[in-house]
Every structure is written in structure tokens, then in C-alpha cells.
Image (tube, rainbow, N blue to C red; front, side, top):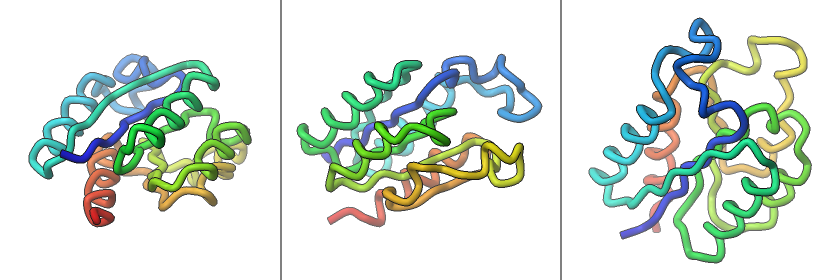
Length: 145
């Protein structure tokens, strides 16, 4: 069974409580359960992690690469806009990474429009709420080799 890492960055542990008008009322646990369930249907084992710490996110990316994971679904949260360290971690691995954002970052405040990580990912999914995570898993399923 191929493995997928579902990796969420800062403040995503507050889903369902933080700005529900933007991020919805579903929790991170809901996201993880949905992706894990779809993963099982597609023949993937999904490992979920969330961290508010940049170095931990980088360590998780490296670990997935060295452990032979098939791909990574990454919501880097606010690190999207300025973390060249996470960008370099993604650029330094050869497994596909799909960047996901619950809201449409391109339709929000100006500072959210640019992702420094997107140019080194296999793709970016934004604005589809928590369903974006499942879309990312479907995209990784298409990469199955």
C-alpha cells in the first residue's frame, strides 16, 4: 500500500473555530478522517500531521521522502507566503507535493496572493474548502506509477 503524508501548517489545528466564515465549521479531525477514508478507498495509507513550527514541517517533508512516500498533501498556512525553507524542502525531494488552501488565497488580502512554495509543487488547489484536500489526493492517485 502506498503512503501519503497529509501535512498541515500553523493555525490549522484551529479549523472549525478560527474564522469559520472563511475556513468553514469542519475541524482538522474532519479533514483527516475524510482524506484517510478516501485514501483507503484508493489504496493509500494516509499519515496525518499538523505543526505550528516551520522546522517540524520541514522534518516531516524530509521523512516522507526518505521513507518512500508516494506524495504529500501540504497546506503550509501562513508559511505559504514567506517560507523559503519549506520551499527548499519541497524543491529538494522527488515525490509530488500538492499545495492546498481551503480559501481562495488569490481572492483575499494582497499579501496572501503569492505562494513562494507553489512554483516547486506538482500543483496547487485553492478555494474548494476542505474538499480541496480530497481533490489533492485524487491528483496524487493520477500520479500513481
